[in-house]
Amino acid sequence: SSCGSSITQNRTYITNPSYPSAYTVTSTTSCSYTVTPLSSDICQLRLDFDSFILAYTSATGECIDTFSVTVGSSRTYPKLCGTNTGEHIYLETGRDTSAQTLTFSVTATTGSATFKIKVSQIECYAAYRAPSDCYQYYTGQTGRVKSFNRANSRHLWNLVYAACVRKEPGTCAVQWSVTS
Image 1 (spheres, rainbow, N blue to C red):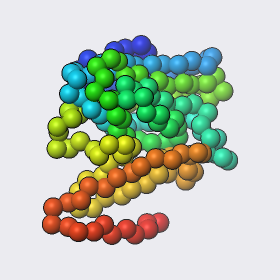
Image 2: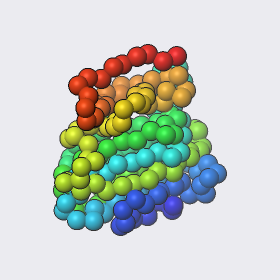
Image 3: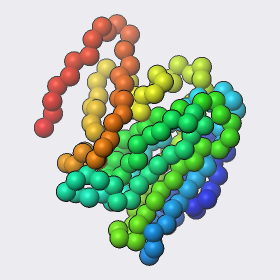
């Protein structure tokens, strides 16, 4: 849970320094973690946000503090902020065995951030692997798909990504409905 930590085990949690208290800064700072894939058979990382609160501008949805990733596949992923507790994302590693980097940037303007994230490494042949380039992947007969930062009723600015839904055995369609 200290900035600069390296993850070398599967299903490892990273937390902000001083978790469960907020990570407090007095000047703009970055807090990075590296994930070293267990082997060249790792195609994806799944990040489960047990707790994720980073500042954003409520008027526009633009990020003040950010979470960004650099992965071996060279794909560009959107920066996230806001309240995203309970959400998840998938990242393509490109079978790269070099370290993948997860970076939190916290500004002195807000001064604090809170995060606890489970990092799982997914083998290329795993049945539960998400289709390529799905930023989110939903499974099961029922569920709820919602945009990032929905807890704050403000969509994040300039956020474009693919949310995928797995076809369940014995089904032939997805039924969507709006919730309040």
